[in-house]
Amino acid sequence: MGTMNPDHANAVMELINRSPYFELLGIELVELAEGSCRVACTFERKHMNAFGGAHGGAYASLLDCAAYWALYGSLAEDEGFTTIDLSTTCLKATGTGPVTATGRVIKRGRTMCLCEAEAFDGRGALLAHATSKMLVGAHLQPMSAAVRELGAAALPVKFAD
Image (tube, rainbow, N blue to C red):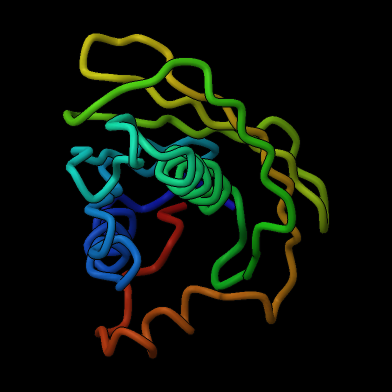
């Protein structure tokens, strides 16, 4: 594998950002690279629990997305993968406002991978941390399935080199 084609990364971000779950929660994939990514969300009332703070599930969703997409750039063209385990630690409560999460690959194995993600508020305070195990396999959610499901045009080639 070579360097990820920037046109491919941009097309994937555009595609994923219009997926139903991202639209529902207002999550946006804003940066995609080999072994890392960044996602963003402006937490609104819909992300809050009954006590006025961000729901732990909102943190978990954002962290899961960051860990998941961090792995994407490390995989072969149309190789599939899925989250099999997510362990989230909520470290600080937040209310409404911008939250970003960064994801990175810790260990890339042939079929099992370990990733992590951290979520930060608009002032840079660490809100939550997660580790995620991913299972990699040809038939586990390959990008071609997202292209079909969302009715998108074929993506540019993934690797430039």
